Length: 163
Image (tube, rainbow, N blue to C red; front, side):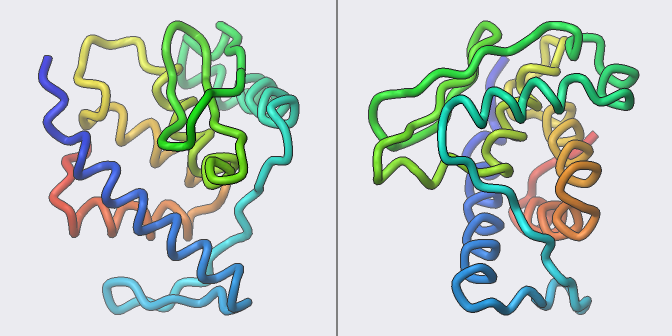
């Protein structure tokens, strides 16, 4: 199937990551989104592949994750990836760039994106509506509902379809 939402999904997520980065840099966590004032929660950052692995292991063991997605019972391996352009998921492996320029990917929003790929058990497009719903659920439950609201708003603004 054609992954027609891929670039719209990535564009929206890039905007959200930028919002979180600016909130951290300026220590101003309140943003205006669609007429609402939202206080962004703190997003976890990772210092090593091992810490990303531990985070993924813990996320997959959460009761509600296991009850929601059958693939939570399948562990995921985390490894470093050469280059700095993207994190990647394939065949139960999450690859994250760790060189200095790739450290942008060593963050909770990116890791949850890759876990949303892992948890999918359908033949839908990689960044289709079912993926978007999984990702929004993970972000909302793990980072916080405010983060999911901001992400959903950016998806909406970018024309991304949800399920």
